[in-house]
Image (tube, rainbow, N blue to C red; front, side, top):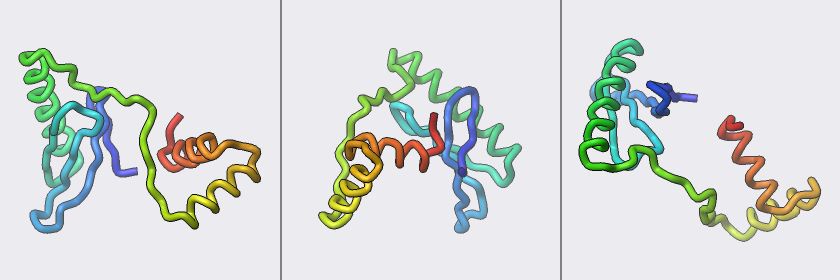
Length: 111
């Protein structure tokens, strides 16, 4: 995966061909914090600076830096995919929610 952990915070990394630089963007924050560099060491350094500035601003404003997730979200798919997923879930002896959660867990390489 194109992610980098900086001081316990996750950032998604991409390459911007227009400026020939890597871009990092922290995810799961109550605001935006991104950073750019030409190499991995520079990206980590710039990420630490960006994160520090963001966390200081949150502390000054009394804002929790991390976004809180409820564990619920709506997913819209076409009816044929909905039907196919329901059949696959039943074939695995699971509810559609259980089956989808496991598929997401595997795809996200999470817990």
